[in-house]
Figure 1 (cartoon, helix red, strand yellow):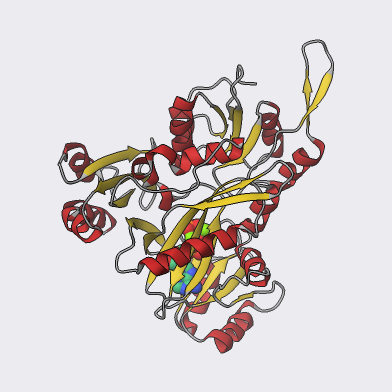
Figure 2: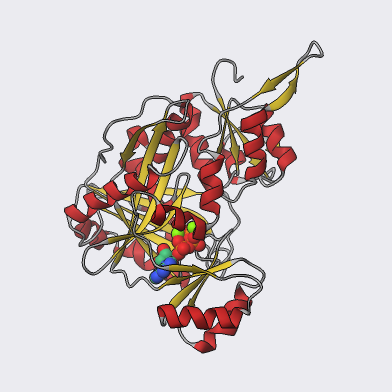
Length: 414
Ligand code: ATP
Ligand code: MG
Ligand code: MG
């Protein structure tokens, strides 16, 4: 379809789509993006196949499918009924001679995976009840129809305080989570998440959060071929938003990191389709692991791979997996340590400028600095870019070296 080169149709054109395009460009692979006209990904990749509109609009999704050899997503909050229909029945394409053909672009990851992951409660029930018995925090669905306050009282009797009240669908960057610490929080929590299907999760008193990106490969008949894991990284969340990522994790044993990789492959083994996936986990005091959630796509915790695993970044891996091109058997970073710092919009549109100036002007023998801006307008708390630092120092030494960056990142949030 793309003059001999395959075309991947992508639902969503935010920063993940933009970085996917940056990886696709040198490979000569076209990405057709379905999103707003000026979406970050469209700024980075010119294509005659882009579609303007919402990635939740079935008609536009069908239009994208008609222009693409493969379909994939950069966000899980998409319309899956139409993806299921495209897989089963295809889309009709009109040919120049007036005839029509049915076109069936493979969809990766599978719509089944996307649909399951969209509902965080069902996602985790699936992991918990799979024969792999994946550990998750105890959770209960809040049934609609019953009095919401009564439901929260019954959650309290099961879990005690604090517990997390969460929207089952549509959440990201913690928007959709409410930490409930006393009965006084019941009303505000229900108001904040009004109208959404909810569930409650037992508080996980974790000592660290880890994330593991994996590449899942599968043959065209849907048989799992392999799962290759990137190293575990430490993710730091502040107010439920990921702000920093550390490779390797600070003060986490190599044994736990290895266990995290095994757990990630175990989790991904229960899903369907090709692509990269992120598995977010909690490390508990006794060293045991619990799965928080899965993202069926490239992920913030894997941005560091652009510079630290340059021969197979998570974006190149996504392209390779979707197209069923070869992927490495092992993913070994080319640096000893890396820190990724998110640039979140501050109170003023220019709150982050001091930080970007520092990133543009720092050069050293001991640390490399890579600035990524996403072409998004700055709004308070919005992810508008990130900075990756890489080095051959230990992670503790790199953290010390990175102090001016970390201070400025923290200042923006105040
Ligand atoms: P994302 O942007 O990763 O999709 P999200 O909106 O889906 O985020 P979660 O991953 O559910 O939100 O939660 C965000 C963060 O809130 C977690 O990374 C963790 O720091 C904290 N958190 C979530 N669930 C719990 C829990 N049960 N106990 C303690 N902390 C939790
Ligand atoms: Mg999430
Ligand atoms: Mg999360």
